[in-house]
Length: 229
Image 1: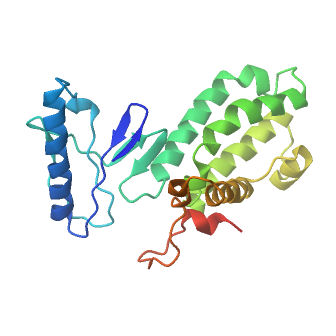
Image 2 (image 1 turned 90 degrees about the horizontal axis):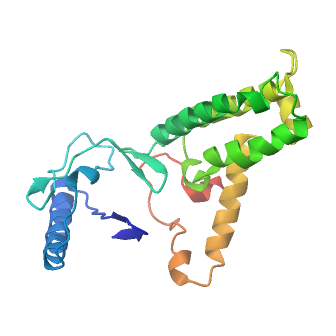
């Protein structure tokens, strides 16, 4: 079980999807017994069942209180959008949509026609817009370059709008003059801080959050530890 505030996730791991589903159902049965004892009713519609796998085989759908838990291909947990294959494509897509909505609402402040100084525009970007896409970057930074490029294009476009820069001014010039790091640079920087913080933490459970590099990798994908230069 993984708990944070009022969010609870139950994870079951097995190479056999049927065995994984059986483990999950066994724990749900124990949970249901506890819920009945304390007269607590769970809303199944607010619960989600998702399989994290690269296989096409679906595991049996678990039940809680005699009802099937809805199955989805994507789930939002602690602000992160997780898809079945953990590609982070769904998360980046959701953040891009959120950024577009927020940017449009603030266009009168940071847009071309705004009389606000460039320094204040940059403060708004760093304080309000940037935290939207940097949240959880230590994890979703493992996404493919094509997905990360979506957010990089957003940042480059936003900086161009804020400065009202002509077409012949390159994105590199904008980033260097405004001292705004590229998305990849932020990923490496935050990943390094995350690793150092966990490695040197007094709590041994926190130290275990760093993945074991000796574990064989079946897929050619980046791990959070790979993001540290």
